[in-house]
Structure formats: C-alpha cells, structure tokens
Amino acid sequence: MEIVDTHTHVISPDSTRYPHAPVGGRQSAWSQAHPVDIDGLVRALDEAGVSRAVVVQASTVYGHDNRYVGEAVRTHPDRFAGVYSVDALADDAVAEIKKWQDEGLSGFRLFTTGTTMPGQADWLGHERSYPAWAYAEENDIPVCLQMTIQGLPALRNLLERFPRVRVLLDHCARPDLSDGRPYQLSRELFELAIHPGVHLKLTHRALDAARAGRSTTEEFLADLVTAYGAERIAWGSNFPAAEGGLLGLLDEARSALSGLSGDDQRAILGGTARAFYPSLATTGGTRA
Image (cartoon, rainbow, N blue to C red; front, side, top):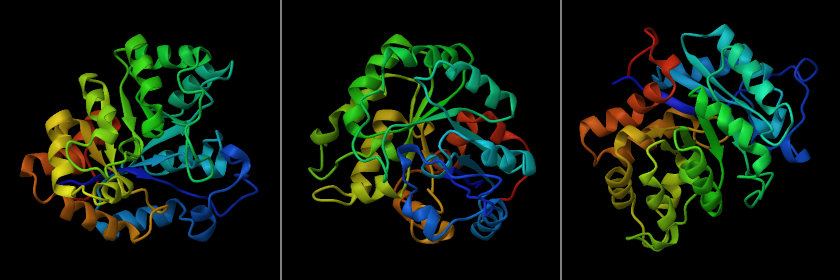
C-alpha cells in the first residue's frame, strides 16, 4: 500500500532568508517548539514508510510568503506537492495564485482559523474573494480550507456559486461529534456531501473528535464513508504540528481505519490524495 500524507509542514532554520510573518501576528507554539526543515521531513517520511506528502504552507509562521514550500517542491519533486497560502480578499489574489502555480505548486490554502486565530473568520465567502474562487474553478485548482464547522454555511454558499471547484477541508472542518450518532451537532458536515467537489482531510484532530463523548471512531468513519465515499477522504498527519511523530500518527490512522474495507483504507491512505493532487501520482517514492 502506497501511503500519501496530505498535511505536513516545513520550517526553515534560516529566519533571515525566510523571515517570519505569521497570519494573525503571532507565531504558533508548535513551530517554535519542534520545527522540522525540508531534510527533516524527508527523513521522517522515510522512517515512517510514507511515499509522498503534501507540504502545506505554515501560515502561522510565514503568512503568505510561500517560498520555503516552493523550495521543498523544487528540491524533492518526486516526494512533495506544495500548497500555498493566499489572501483571497487582496486585489492581487489571482495574480498570486498564477505566480505560485507557475512555481510548480499544486493549489492554495485559505486560513480562516487556527491555534493563533481561534474562532471562524467572517471573511470566508466575502464577495471580494470571488475572483480567486472563480479562477480556481476555471483552472481546476484545488482549494484547501482551514476552517471550523461554523464556516460551513459560508462555504455552502460559495459552492452554490462555484459548483465545479474542488475543496479539501482540513481536519474535516473540526466537527463536534460528542453527541454521537446521528451526529446532529455536525449535521451540516454530512449534508455537505451532496457537493461532489468537497473532500475531507482526516487528521488526528478529527480522530480525537470522533472519540469524544458518545462518539466512537468506528461509527464516525463508517458514517463518513457512507456519506462521502472513501475516494473523497484523505489522511493527513499534521506533522510536525501534531504530537507523536509521523510514524505514531500513521499508526493511529491505520488503527482507526482497520474496520473499513481494504479498498477504503487504500483510498484514504493514498488513493484520494493522488487523485486530488495529480502531481503526487507520478512514479517513484517508497511503499509501506
């Protein structure tokens, strides 16, 4: 089984060449406590037996300066796809998207919440962001969204306006699953499955939520696969922001997914990522 990780980060030790300018004005604690550079990420992938990975812009370190993600992809095009960050409300948003796509990166991320920016930003879905969404739809550029469940109504409105856009929701949009089946507290997450372009990123945050309250991981994953299909769910480690190391995070995911069919496991642990980011589907890498 070829393993693909859809959510990793890299931090350069050279803050002069790559100065810090975090979104929200405050650098994340994880990036200060245990940063991992490009070479360190490659070693972690090799140790865990992960074939390829998506390097996602560390917005809480570099903001919209995506040069280090670009360096990762240039240095290891056989291992990495890159996701860059943009300010969707900026007048030059489309120009920035074109620039980073031309640099060989594979889609952009909108950062609307996080450890340094709690809550859900109210600019998601603002009409000033329409040009960025329209360009993504017209050019089949995938959009990664760091958001919460509270942002789903705004996203739904965007999908009605731009129905062909492909989106990937970090951490499954951070759902509240504590009520257990039928998951009424996160009903909108399951209802969003009617939009065929919506994909989910299954990370430790989503798995933690699935173990809270009356929820169980087995029931949540079964219901998620029923709603979306495994071909629209992709595993991501969130390494090194998440605790436990890459191999430990992969082992956690494998254990959680063990109740699904082999085909579903293969899709979530690699197949969906390769389809969503076609640059990951080239030959090479390692198998686990």
